[in-house]
Length: 289
Image (cartoon, rainbow, N blue to C red):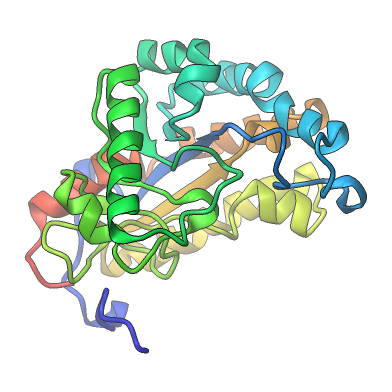
């Protein structure tokens, strides 16, 4: 089947987007705050033990994120005045309430990211999916004091029903379709697709490409330079995607801090949250893509 979720909209045919303060690039830092199950294979650094239960090697590597990495990253975000857009598994609210408390104190945006990151969002009936999404959204809203406005599926997964069900629950945007440098409207009333990145993403760059810290900084700078140049015809969006168990390893951290400093100090950047960017786009643009 061909999909009907969104229409083809070449970026050269759109009306210009204008960001606050004359900024050319709206930038948000996506911090993935996740829980992984101990009895199920998940993102791994060593495939040889990934199928075992338990798998101390890979589980422990991932568990570095909530125990140590997130706190190192929070120091950098605070230093550069950056509010995170937290991609939050609802299970985090139970397992790591201290992280939620720290984010509430800093007025982070909270994006629903499924229940945990060991379970992909697929293989459900309509009734099962509706109940699952209601539970995720309600759990996050109760724990954070703010009902989430956006959705990122675990490993960017959805069903064909997900955007419509999220709209019924009052959400405004999804981040799973990484096919644009601007937000656009889906063929679901009230629902946007927001730019996310599987390229400027520490999973891809550090694990998939095995790049160094200096490589990472250069890529962030190059991404921003190109988007800033493109924005002469209308504002663009840049997402920097971080996972604390990867990018906040000690030997990488200073380079992540350099990248954050570059984004925070760039005069052409509106440093915002994904919630703020989506709301501005919805409020200031017409109804077509």
